[in-house]
Image 1 (cartoon, rainbow, N blue to C red):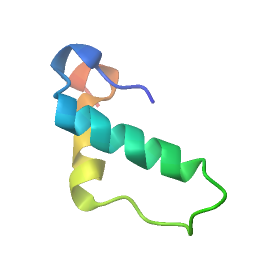
Image 2 (image 1 turned 60 degrees about the vertical axis):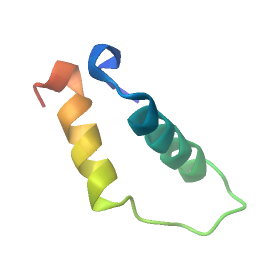
Image 3 (image 1 turned 45 degrees about the horizontal axis):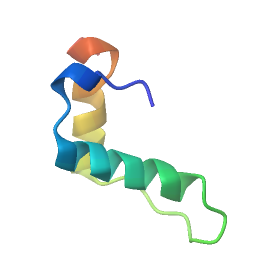
Image 4 (image 1 turned 180 degrees about the vertical axis):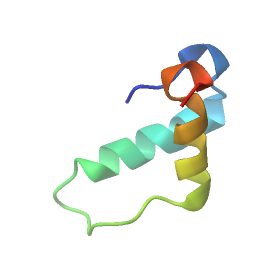
Length: 50
């Protein structure tokens, strides 16, 4: 997922993991990522520089 694991909070990790797993599940309807998840991913990609 391209996350900076050094600054990762467990609850944030679990939310990102759930979204990642749901994105790859063909059984569930397609869902957009929440604004909070988008901010989290943007803040933690590439060591927080992205």
